[in-house]
Structures are given as C-alpha cells and as structure tokens.
Image (cartoon, helix red, strand yellow):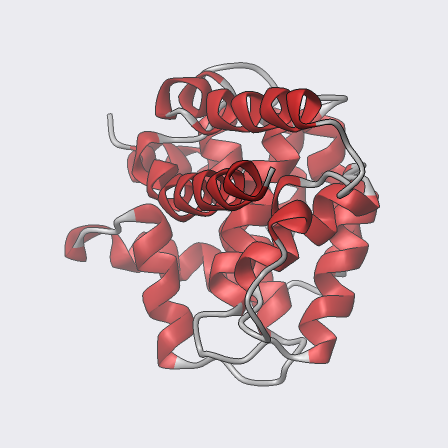
Length: 225
C-alpha cells in the first residue's frame, strides 16, 4: 500500500468536523509514523504558506520535490494541504501534537524542519514571517537554537554559509570534536537512518542537500586546520 493510500485511510478515520491535527494521536507507532511525517510536513507547510501571504508555484513544486508526488497522488496531497490551510487550529497546536508523537527523538524533528526549510526557500526568498514561523515550530519541537541556526545557514541564500554554523560547532572547537560531529551528521543523514526514524522513502530526497552541505563544510574546516 502506498504512503498516499495510507494517508487516505488515516484521514477517513477523522470524525465530521474534527481537526486534521487530531490525526497525529492515531499515528504514534511504527510504521504509521511515516504517514504522520508526511502529513506533518504538508500540514505545517500549508500553515507556513500563510506566513508570507502567498502560495507560489515554486512552493507547490517544492512539495513535489520533497515527496516525489506522482500525478495520480496529487489530489490526495492537495486534500491534506487544503484541510490544514482551512483548519481553524493554529500552527502551534499542530506543532504540539507532532511533538507529542515524536517524543524526545532528536532526528525526527530535524527531518521535519528540513522539509519545511526546503519549502520556505523554494521561491528564492526567505520571508521574515517564515523565519518567525520556523523558529517557533523548532522551539515547540525541542530543537535547540544552535541546530536551528545550523539548518538555516544551509538553506537561507543571504550569503555563503559559515561552515562552522552549518555543522553547529564553534570555531574554537578542537578539530577532533568537529570531525566527530561531522561523522554523526553523516550517519543521521543516511537514507537507512532516516527511514528507521519514520521518514517515508518518498521524502528521503530532502537529505541530499543536507549531505552535500555538511560534507562541504567539513572539507572547508579540515583544509583550513
């Protein structure tokens, strides 16, 4: 059964008028966490689209890039997007429900934030309201400020990212510790690790840019050492 068929099943279990955010209560255990992850990125992406006041074609394309949505599945993805966009529940309620589902896991919130950043910058602009939105979501999910800034450094096209920010380390950190951090990030970014955390195979593509950026950052730091 495809991820989109499983999403359809999850949505059909909601009672009439029930908030989409209620679906996360039903998807706590594997393998349904992959369903929850997909719904979470689409739903929070829909809420984020309100932050800059405009849903662009680039942002819609970004959804397809993150999830590799086949033409036959576009209607189901659009249904999730529109349910979240029209839901009276605020984005903070969504984020809190997702946090309850993820628990204390470090990797899953980072995977979720990665997808949201990918969508946020798809139109070539990182709107200040998007930054406020993503910062608050990261805070609710328990992502520490250093990790959030490291992720933002990889995505926001303001300037050449500082390699230390990309890896989430200080310039004064010993090179051996930086190497350890880099290796840990590489392990966490491996597709098998992501799938084990509940990221659906359809969304593992979001890790490609992460891997490129963290390897480039390590190369820059190592060469300068």
